[in-house]
Image 1 (cartoon, helix red, strand yellow):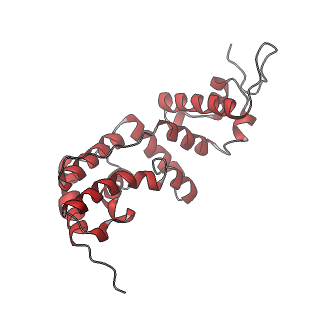
Image 2 (cartoon, one colour):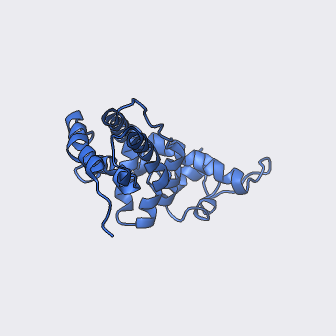
Image 3 (cartoon, one colour):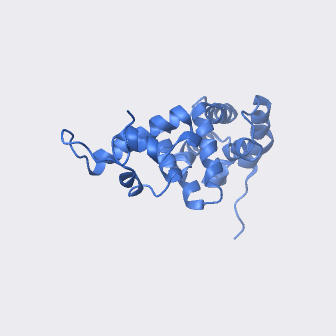
Amino acid sequence: MTENPTTQPSAGQTRRRGAVLEEAILRAAVDELTESGFAGLTMDKVAARAGTNKNAIYRRWPNRLALGIAAYRQLATTVQPPDTGDLRSDVLELLRGANRHWSSPLGAILRELLSAAGGTSELLAQLQEQSSDAAAAPWLTILGRAVARGEASPEALHPRVATVAVVLLRNEFVVRGAPTAPDDVLVEIVDEVYLPLVRRRDPAPN
């Protein structure tokens, strides 16, 4: 018999509260998200899997999308920047890793969430792979090493400049709807846009 997600714990169960209950809900949401994608994620299923009621979920996440984003953030991992000793090689390696992520089942979940978030800026901001600072960190790292080697201009050390390549790649998935980006597109992004930008960037006029 299927558990009713609105029922309270039975006499033999310990009522969970606070961080313990929140962790159980998030774990259940992660499991549902990985098994069924965002399209199959429901508050009822998460409540049943977590052994709680929907009210406990709604007190923490106002809707299915907010819960889906929180669950995705549990799955996202920190990217370690490559260090090949060459800017072009580093950028290509990092971009190819991002392409593999966006082409993976986890990337498909991310694309679903981005589509569902639409123009909701607050929710979109939460989907920037932990945070905008965390997303920019590996790019700033490889760019900083390139500046030290004389391969890039110090004026290029800005998060918006550093992440141009991955933003262009993201557009291939989100705007164009591509299931993956061919390697020649990655090379074009690096050679025709990214490297000329970081090598020739001039300081802003006073």
